[in-house]
Structures are given as C-alpha cells and as structure tokens.
Image 1: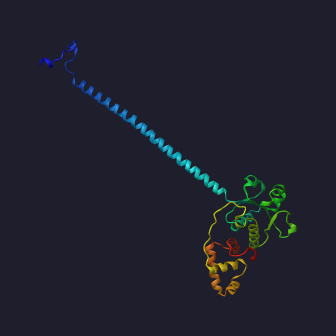
Image 2: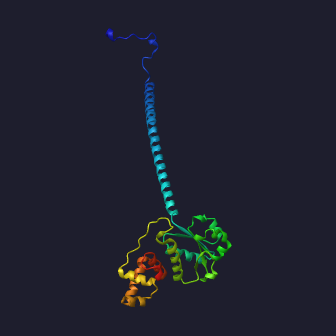
Image 3: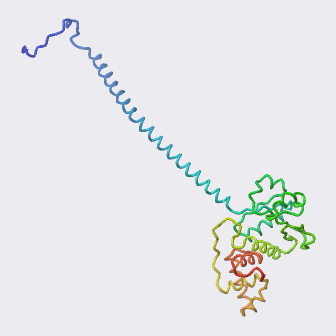
Length: 276
C-alpha cells in the first residue's frame, strides 16, 4: 500500500475485532433502518398534525358560521311570524270559538286567531300581544276591569242583537244569527277599524286569482244576496250558465260558502260593504 494512503491506526487497534459477526451486522443495519423509519414517521406526524388541526379548526369555524347563519335566519323568521297581527277568542264554548276563528281568518286573511277557554288561559299567554279580544259576555262580566281598560280592542260576543241587552261602551257582535249576517257584522267592524290596513302592521298583500268580467258580475250579485234564478234574470243569461260561473268562481277562490264569497267580494272591492 502506498504511504500516502496509509493511515495510522489507533493505539488500541489490536483490541478492535477484525469483522463484526454477520448476525450482529444485520441487527445494526435493522436498528438503523428502524431509527430512520421512526424519525420519518415522527417528522410526518409533526407535519400532518398541524395540517389536521388546521383542517379541524376550519371545519369547526365553518360549522359555527353555518350555525350562526341558521340561528339568525330562525330569529328573522320568528320576527316575521310574530309581526302577523293576532287576535284572541276567549269563549268556553269550544265549537263556537273555533267557528269564530275560521270566520275571522276569512274576513281578515292576514290575521291569526288563537282560542282560549277561559281568561286564565289568556292571561298565561302574553295577552298584551293581541290586537283584539273577542270575548263571551260572561268572560267580560267576570273580568270587566281588565277589558274596560282595553275597550278599544275588545269585541263582545253577545247572544242578542238588542242594544239594550249588550254591555254599554263596548263593540259587540251578535252570534245568534245566520253565518252570512255574522260575517256582515265582522266585515263592518273590519272596515270601520282596519280598512286598507289601518292600525295594522304593514303586510304583503296576497293577490287572488283573476276572475273574468262575467264571473266578477256574478260574484257581486251573489254577495248582494241574489239567488241563481235572480242572477240569471238580472244578467239575461241561462240558469245553467249562472251555475257554471258560480262553480268556477268557488273553485278559483277555494270558497265553499256564500259567506266566504261575500267576504272575498267585499275585501277585494267587487262590491261595496253597504250594498250587501
């Protein structure tokens, strides 16, 4: 070996083994390989963990943002629903209260009516949020001081049309009359207090289906109380034609009674309130 390639051996070189046993050498390589693999895994984990954390953080933030948006939308919907004018019907006669509810919601389609069997039930459900109270005569007499302080929003459901039998100082409607007459009383109240939406929160008006000119004429005459034969004579058309027009009107409007047709005609300007 050339001198310039020769390297001095350590003083204790004789104590070094000339070669590692084969098995021990393989074990050393295996350990080194495992160490490198572990280090690689640790490096990958140290890189992946921040990425995973960042991804989780983004996902959590996204969920929170969606929940915040959903909560805001829910609150807006609640506000819109709460903005609908509501009326309370306080009457222990449940069938009568439900009938009044249906009629009121026909007369003033934008309102929502709630029924209560007693004044205690009304008191437990935020009574001040109601625009009007429709109360039985007994309910009024038992709680007169409460309703007297709110007489401008109280309507008494009286059993008699005789003014002398009705409580003084309150608006009254007589419930012991045919449905058509009761609807007329409610329409008169609505027109005097809330015509064109007066004293009610602004609401989007719902546009009903368009009637033909002849259907509008038939509807107006129905609202004035004419029967089919009288309508046929007034318009100079056949009885069968009147029946067909009437059927088409009821299908278009979704109305199933003369009262419903009368209410629609008045509320949509097909006939004047004073002419029915």
